[in-house]
Length: 397
Ligand code: NAP
Ligand code: MG
Image 1 (cartoon, rainbow, N blue to C red):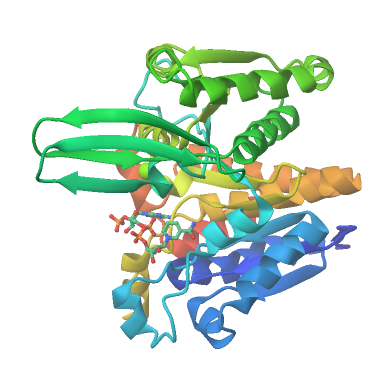
Image 2 (cartoon, rainbow, N blue to C red):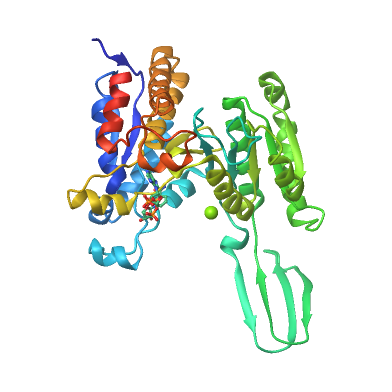
């Protein structure tokens, strides 16, 4: 059979542990037999990051910026335990945070929906995609705990030497306080990435914050979103994309009654917390995809879950594993569809859609890995192991 030609290169970032094992199988059984594709390969496995003093991560990010589309396997973010396990020269930072920083990107998380797994929230019929602003707020804050009474003040010294000062609180006894910030550029980038994403997916945008209480801070977010939306109005109208601003509490109440199908953009903390609620509401981490979109339209696709360490240690001992490869497969199909759309090669897009259909039909016919069993309406006759599931997808494809 002639393989389908993918016109331009795709940046491939390999990773760690169980997802690395799955990655190789997906490539061998589901991608390379069908696609004639130029993969720019970067090994972001922790061992190789350590050998290259982590240069490989930056090289990969640069390649995504150059070629426009990348697909990434889950990677280990080192902690003290990993320092010893991998004999690391340094506690290298999270590759995801680095790539996100380099591309100035926003992360969008979207669940994969199948008929025989009902979301915990009855109203949900379509995927709810969450966009989390991944810069600033409490994640880059300074905090003080005081055992004594005193005055907490917020002081800003501008580059021209002018200062502004407000009293945060007159503490009559022990207390805690915090200073946090964000930048206009980062908020604008976030709004633009959301608009980019909504235009590609042709879905409405919700943005929620708490501007009734935080009139200046959250008020600024609301104002910037409104300005960016106004600037993109012609494109949004043409794509049929509507924009709504909600107070965060109103949005939370509305989402429980809505059938879904929108992009829900949130500030850093709201997005951190509520993306986990949405993920749990739709089922398994193994069914959640994630894409990083830069404000200038570069895309990096991945699974939302980590390297599934516990399964990897079973695999190393030669024990059977039943790891869900769906989100990793959808990272590939997402990247191939994007590549195809950018290069105007409908055959590549069609192939990726067929691969997605093969995956969905597997699950809907009861061929599933162990993580999905408790979520199903009717229990399956058999639980598929990691390889059997990928083989089943291959045979349906
Ligand atoms: P994890 O890999 O997401 O797995 C946590 C648990 O969730 C697993 O033990 C498993 O539960 C379940 N699970 C997740 N994905 C699954 C799948 N595809 N199929 C079946 N079950 C799945 O998180 P972790 O074990 O806490 O983290 C491992 C490593 O991943 C860490 O080093 C962390 O730094 C890294 N990480 C990377 C990324 C990324 O690159 N994007 C994201 C998150 C974490 P059971 O054990 O109950 O079966
Ligand atoms: Mg969270």
